[in-house]
Image (cartoon, rainbow, N blue to C red; front, side, top):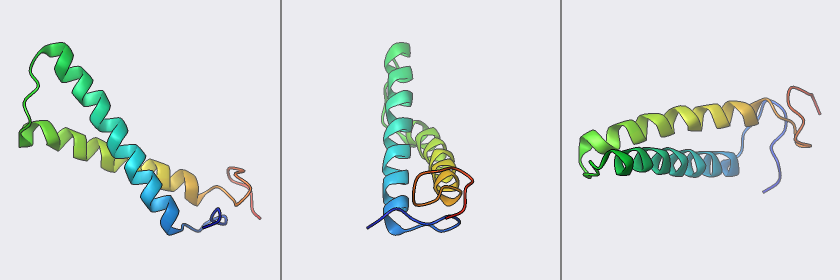
Length: 77
């Protein structure tokens, strides 16, 4: 797949965005729990990971939506 055009998204954008968002959120939250000494894998642990991932994923998709195929932000083709 190639880079998506300005005001368009492709499947690659979706996959990469949510992988990066989920791993980033997971690592930052796991680090905070390890520092606090309270690492327990329950819904209370995963809920902020999922919510943070969702927000970061949406931000990544918005960035890609407004970036053209030459990776210039807010520039048309």
